[in-house]
Image (cartoon, rainbow, N blue to C red; front, side, top):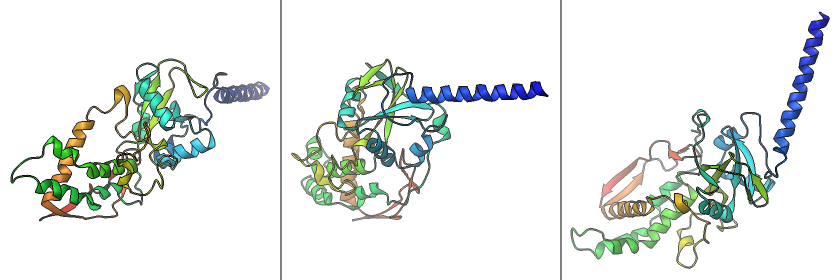
Length: 296
């Protein structure tokens, strides 16, 4: 009996020592000058708050608490740093395949993928319902001969329409961010990011940041007018550097052509004006955004 009690006591001591060492390592990060932040709960880290909360809130809370330039966290089972702001965007875009490479989180991502519905209106509907751009599109249509198709010059005239698209993408990004993996130890903002750690790049650090966009929750396509647009690396809906979306110009062509034909041919009615968004990381209209079209 005494042997059993002694063995149990020894096991508790060893467990206590192990937990102490584990805790110390988590805080010290192997004595490297790691960015400020929290690794959250064991194993889970801060995954639940990252996936099931608002992306902007997750980022802004930590930028305010730790640093507006960089912070560390643990999401999807990965030790991760978030590099923030326009300077962070530029650093990531200019060091692709030098200091880090693309990375997709492992199978934990599918376990914790968010399908939480929000009560906010579907902001992308603004693209269909707010058309001061109608005037722009009708002017282009009136300048064409019957049956004549759009050409490149016509697309260049759709400045306000493209500003509307930009503002929709700022308010409701089609993708919140992507991951990279550090190829070697490197330093940013005075902190060390170890080899193998993950970097999370996200538009959330700038898109709704009042430092870069006045009244950021307001829908205002005039933000992008020539001479008054955001500074370099502030608004990057298509990414940048070697990994800039290769379909950017095709997307512009397809979206503006679609807008022109819808405006020219139809009146429309959104069937569910207050439709919910499913998921925060990759927003999707809950009912598929049904629209009733009526010919002019």
